[in-house]
Every structure is written in C-alpha cells, then in structure tokens.
Image (cartoon, rainbow, N blue to C red; front, side, top):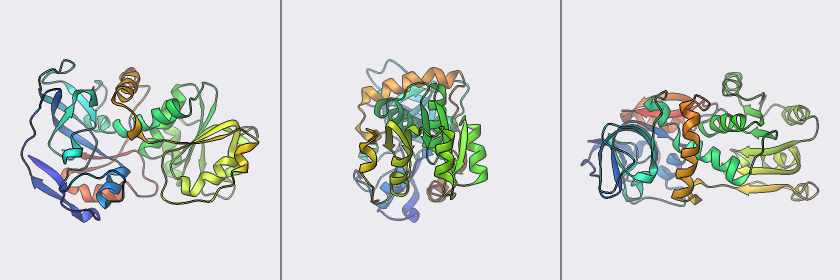
Length: 324
C-alpha cells in the first residue's frame, strides 16, 4: 500500500510517498481501508521533532481518519467488515499513522461514522472535536447560559468548540482574523464574532457581555492572548489553554479578585475510556446534524507536504484533509 512517511525530522520536505507493507489486524484491532486523513497542527510539530512525544523513525504521521472496515481481529465485537467508521488514534507509536491507504487501530479508537457525514467530514472529527469536548466539559465544566469566548474559532478545534458550546446552550463569541473567517465562524453557530487583533477587540468583547466579562475562554494561542484573556473574565471565569507557541508575561493579580482560573489541557492525558465516552456522547449529535464537521482545504495523499503548510496558515477555515 501507499503511505506518507518521514525518514527524518524536519520541514514538510521530509514527507515522502512510500510503498509499505499492508498492516494486519491483530487481537482487538480493526483494519480500515482509509478514505480520508485529517491533518492537525500537532502533526507538523511531530514532523519537525519539536514535540514531547516523538515516534521512532521512519514513521507515518497522522492521528485521524475515516474509511471502511476491511477486517477485524479476534475479540472485536463492535465492528465488522463493510462498516463505515472514523478513527482517532492508530498504531502510530510503532510508526504507523493515518496518512496511509490502510490503517490498523485498537477497537476503542474506532467509532461508527454517521450516515449524513462524508469520509472527509469523518476525518475532521477525531482530535478537533475530542479536544473541544474535553476543554469545555472536562476542564472548564461549562454550564448552559454561560458565555464562551473561542479565540481562533475558524480553525478545526475552534469551529468544533463553537458548535459544542452552542449546542450546550451557551452564548458563543468567536474570533477570527479576516472577514471571510468571521463569516465562517458565524456559520458555525457563534452568536457574535469579533476580529482579533483589531484595536477595539477587547472593548467589543466586554460590551457584548454587558461589562460582566466572559465565563469561559478557550484559547488557541496563549502566548499572544493570555494576559488580555485574564482581563476579560467574569468572576469565577476560566481560561482553558489549548494552543500555545511561546512564552508570555502575565499579571497573576488579575486572577485574584475574580477567583479566576488558568487551566491547561492536553488531549493525550485523556484515558481510552474517557475518549470512548466523549465520542459516544457526540455520536447522536453528528447523526442529527447538530454537529457538522467543516472541511477546509483538501489535498491528495501525495501532497501531504502542502497540507502541512496549509494547516498552519493564518485564517485557515475548517479542517485540512488528505483524500485517498
């Protein structure tokens, strides 16, 4: 089969199309004929070698995808050949990721793909929606009626956060960097949109809350926004740091008078049981059209290097996907 592999860490040019042996489903595993693979920013950090958890070389990148079950190993009961599925997590730790024509996954990492969704949409679920769900419900513990600010709401995790928060009965404010991005964020369900980086952006957000501040901020770029975020919070407000690309100086005094909290969040700290539960909770919402993954740019498998560039572009909308 064909797969994208990196034989060394480095820039996008290290991603090459290789012929590799087909994987075989072992006990408790599901073999999937892959039709689409999601491209996440974390894929680029791993490719660069700039991540805490690195696979052995050479490796096939990728975590998310969607396709059709080709075979199952002993002990697998939830799936059979021919089932449409999406997955989040492969045997990438042993060098096998999602950028491949076939993938082998533990059964717990495989989920039914609701009929309304395409394979490309299925590939847009895994990391983005699990990250958004965990940030909102496991870390921030949002309540219906609260105001949620999503910084960088036009990206894959951002649009998933907007949809989940709105579906839970929250008032959602989403930021983006372009007019096109703002339109996209509103289409995802945000009640209000604000152009981040605009001189009056912080005042505009405060005004939208009637001056009381926001209850929860889901932050995609903490090294730029965190100090300002603390000034936007309501009493007992929470910032969940989902993304960060450097250091920042903050004034901790801003947290004291409001009893506010800064919460880190890494999807990799979730147990298999937690991940299975959150995907099962979201399943009916995908089937009913409450949650609709937005696919942005699409690339053929051979153009994975270009996809890695696109996923880090400013103003990216929706999920970048490789189609097989």
